[in-house]
Length: 177
Image 1 (cartoon, rainbow, N blue to C red):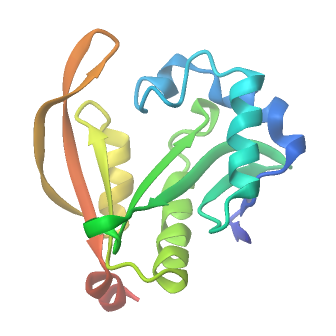
Image 2 (spheres, rainbow, N blue to C red):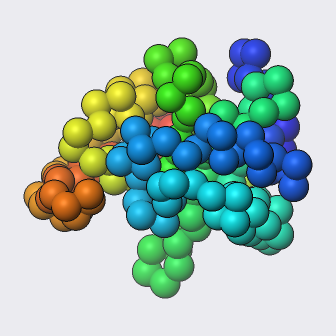
Image 3 (spheres, rainbow, N blue to C red):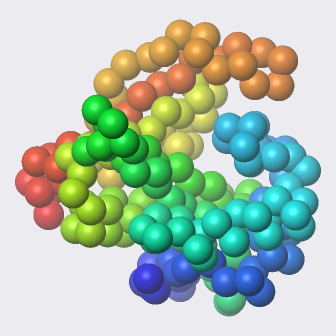
């Protein structure tokens, strides 16, 4: 996939992305809003493993957000299985240098369209840490609905946080197109 989102590009990861990925991802202000699977510090080994998985996954679901051929963020989704096989869990991050520019909002708009058009899913959802108001705004601008709060469901950096659940159902997406 390669899609222009303004002056930014949503594209597949490349092996040459390691250095810029690390430069922009290794930031405690980014890591504090993500699961521990996205480590801080974000090392070259972590970037290489992430990129390897993204390049080699059968169903393309993880993408780089690039500016001037440098990775400044990422967005992707996990296709679930078993009784959740019609759902996908989405996640994204943007370099702190690019916060507040509407990049995540635009990238999520493209990725939700891609997900619903490409895969047989009925629902896209995510859990946002309760202290991440910017991510809540990104979701709401993209038509995601607040479903509920999982109280003290996240233990991050030595403290408990609530997790806010947001989702978008295929019918809602169709109506918004």
